[in-house]
Length: 281
Image (cartoon, rainbow, N blue to C red):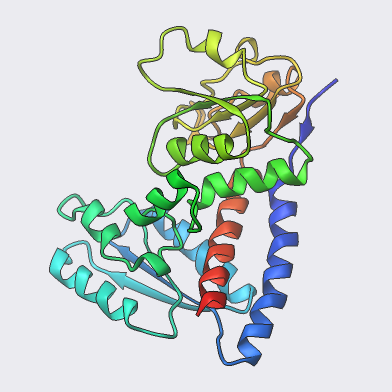
């Protein structure tokens, strides 16, 4: 029997409807949630992501501010813009779209965002809160994965979760959220010997490495939940994930598609974090 496909787009739409209602309540109190997005340069993929984020904000009744800067923008200018946004009471969430041009220090830029407005969840204060279990903003993609598991009734407690990827944006926070949910977690990466032997142990398998169709059917435990965070192009130029979808769906119990899986949930969690920031003020 083929795996159940986890409809991230449908779940995100339902969540966003709820956020719209909460935003309307805040707006009636004079606190319309506000998100500022800064993009530096002309990266085509980044422009698509930013456009989707701005559109999602407007559809949810949020105030959005898009700040487009040329690729030659200096770090001092960018940090100055962030300082202005930090001080703006109409802005509750700030994100700097990554990647930034090479001459800009991404870590310094992220740390310049006030932690209470770090709705991407990338600030070191957010990372520390996640590590220690304190309230804070979890990075949007891992938070979206956890929301998908909850919606499907998949309890991570007592399960073996394997995360393939160790980035600060997805892999590490994903492992921490699964650990907090009671899973036993294994993190794999480019230096993991015999990756397939590890992934075959997973009740919950999260692929987040950015390599097209890396996870094949023989690497998946029967009836496992397979979450595909990847966004790649295959040899024919078609959009695909880190999981070889069609063969793996014949083995897994649940699987997320690309597109329509984790991606929409990432944006939904960005809205959730922005709404949370507005509600705290």
